[in-house]
Structure formats: structure tokens, C-alpha cells
Amino acid sequence: MNNARDISNDCNDSVSGIGQESSDPLSERFLKSDWLEEYRAQIEVLWHHSARLHGNLHLLSKISEFPFDLFGDGQDLCWILISRALYETSVMTTWCIVFDSDGNALTMRQFRNAVVTSAKDLEAKDRIIERLRKVDFDSRVSDTEEKVKALRHGQLAHLDRDIAMGAQEERAAMFGVSLQELQSTASAVHELISALSFDSGRAPTYFDYDNVTGLKRDEGARILPPI
Image 1 (cartoon, rainbow, N blue to C red):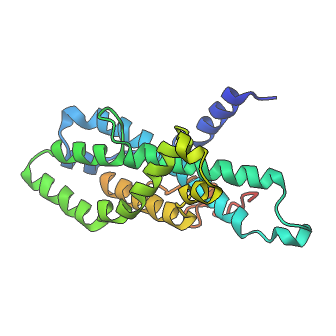
Image 2 (tube, helix red, strand yellow):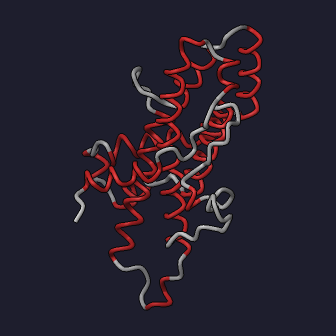
């Protein structure tokens, strides 16, 4: 039976190369040559986190929509725990790649700023900024930021004593980030990745869970995931 490390390695192996562009001539036209290697490494890391976020949210939405009442009294403890784990992981991943304010953190904002400052020339910089303006990333994620921050700091990464010992209503209010808000933020992340990869064809998530790109490359038939 695989241990956690084996499972993690299997997952990484199964998605290696997914979303990667075979070549990125446009990035070579827009960015300084001495930063291209770092650019490719950073966008690959961010894309994998984004793809996992989309995959987790896809699973969570399918579970939340499933009519468990058909089988009795509703969701059993197993599905409740799975849903909670997917939700908390999605919140933490959103914090990790979007809102983390640590100066050494690799986030979408940090990466975006690095791409702008590494533009090859003024014309390239202007064209990159225009692409970013169309995504309008900051305004699209702003409403979610404080909610994710409060949940991350008060319940997930840290356990705030006052919140933990407070009334049930106060603790429930901490989980005020809806699935729709997380999905909206994840969509903004993907659009920013697309803009910063110069539309090189990165899928928003793993092929199995992408309604657009979920195709077998050889047969062209839809891949039907188990959930």
C-alpha cells in the first residue's frame, strides 16, 4: 500500500508535462533572456498549484451537488470529512499562491510583478501591462482576500484562542468563504497564468477534470473521471 510520499509522487508523475508548452517563443520575445529559465520554473510551479486548486474545487462542487438524501439521511461522516478537507486545502492553496504577503513567497502577484520588471524593452513591457489590464486580477480577487486571510490566520494555519473558545455562531462565521468565491478566485488565477504564459495553451486543471481539454489525445474521446 502506498504511503503518503508514494501517493504524492504518483500524483506528480501523472501530471508531469500537463499544461507545459513544448516551446514558448513568445516569452522569448517579451522577456529578458537572462530571466527566461527562472520564468519557466516559476510559472510551472504556480500552474501545478493552480491546477490542483481547480481539481479540488471541481471535486468539492460535485460532492456538494450530489443528492445524498437518495441513500437515506444524507451525507455520512466520510463525505463530510472529505468535503471539509477539500475546502480547507482549497482555502490554503488560495492563500499560498494569491494572498501570501511574505516577501519570499512565490505568488501570482509576485510573479506578475517580476514578469513586468523583466520585460525585454519598453514595447514589450507595455504589451505585457495591457495583457494584465484585461485580466483585472486584483479587483477580481479583492473581495475574497480578507475572508481567506481571516480563515487562514484564525482557524487553519493558526488556532485563535478567542475564536476557538467563542460561540458556535462566531466559529461558523469564520468559514465565510463560499465555494463560488473560491471558484471565482481560481478562475482569475488561471486567466492570469494564461496572460503571463502568453496564451501558450496551459489547461486550467488536469485533463480528467477539464470540460474543455478533457480529451484523450489519441482518440479524441471524453475522459470520464470517477467523480
